[in-house]
Length: 78
Image 1 (cartoon, rainbow, N blue to C red):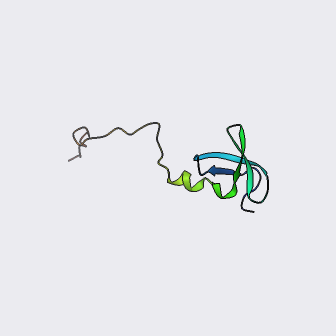
Image 2 (cartoon, one colour):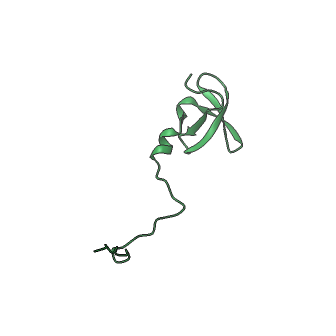
Image 3 (tube, rainbow, N blue to C red):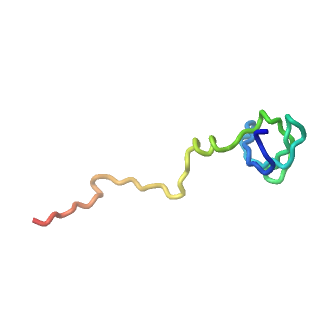
């Protein structure tokens, strides 16, 4: 089997992450997403790692733009 109990999986239809709680049969698993448990087919879930690495990261602290006029000039000793 590709998945094990406790694996974090991505629900392809809703793009949410959940954990595998139980296996119903060879083709279905019981998944818990934010406290809600429901059955899903194995071909409708995937590991979330590809999504995590490809989505854009939103930083909490955006960089300030620096313009050339705002940069202080360094004085070199003569």
